[in-house]
Length: 364
Image (cartoon, rainbow, N blue to C red; front, side, top):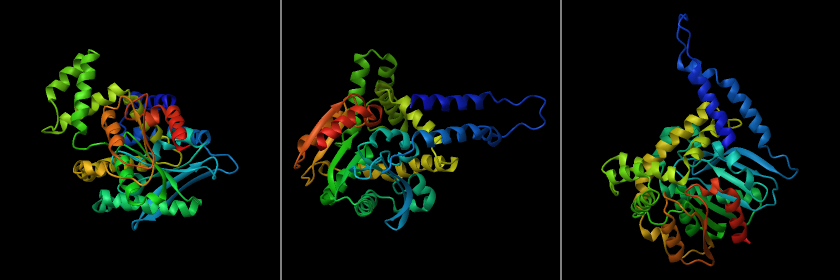
C-alpha cells in the first residue's frame, strides 16, 4: 500500500505544481486541473487491474448488483479457488465500504478464501445506484436483514452450506446481530475492531489514550486530550481530537490515506464512484451513529449458537481492546476465543499475515 500511496501523493503534487502562467488569458478551472490527472489515474488503474487480477483456472472474480431488501446493492466476489470457504466481510464506518480499495487490501486472503465485499445500503456504489433518498430506509435492523438475505443468496449461488462472517468495527455490530438471528447460515462469526460496549467505548478509549500519551511523553497529545476532557463532548471537536490521536498512536493515518489512493486508482472505478463512497460515509454516519450509540450491553452479551472469535489489535484505541476481550468473556458460544495481534483498530488490514494465520488456526 505504501507504493500506491506514494503514487497518489505524486499525483497530488503534480496538481499543486500546475500553476497557470501569468500570460494566460483564462486561468484553468479546478476541473481543468483535475483532468490533467486522468491519464495518470487511467495508467495506474490499468496496472492495478493486471496486478490484482484473478488468473487461476478455478478462480472467481465477479462484481454485480443484487436485489437485497428491495433495492440493488453492489457486491464483489473474488477468490483463486471456488472450492475455498466463503468469507462475507461486513465493512465498518458506518458507511466505509471496502470495495473501492479492497481489491488490494484483501488480495492476500484470496488464496485460502473466496471473499465477498458488500457496499451496504446507503454506501458506495449502492448509494450511487439508488440515490440519497434510499437513506430514508437506513436502519441497523434493515442492514441486518439485507445481510441475511445476501448470505442466503451466496449459499445458493456459490454452493456453500455455511458462510464465514467477518465484521470490522461497525460491521462487528451487524455481525453480532446477524449471527444471533440466523446462526444456521454461518460457520463462525469473527469480529475485529470489535465493538464491545457502546455506552463505555469512547470513555474507555479516552482513558487509554491519555495514559498512553503520558507514558510516552507525548506532551501535545496530553495537552489536547486534557483540554477536551473525557466524553461525552459538547460538540464534534472533542470526538475529532480523540479520533486523531487514536489514529496517530495506532499508526493508522498513513493507512487511511492510502485507502483514498487505492480508491482513486481502482480498476473500473470513476471519480463519481469515489464521490459516492465518500458521500456514503456522511449519509450513513448521520443516520446510523445515533442508532448504534443507543444499543445496550444486552446486544453484546447472551448466548450464540455459532462459534465466536475476536481477533483484535492489541493497541486498539478506537474500539478498546479491553472491551472486546470483555465481550468474549461474557458471551456463551459453542466455541469462543479472543486473540490479540500486533496493531490497532485496523490490524486486520495493517497486519494481514498475522490475522490470517490466527483466523486459519481458529477455523481449523
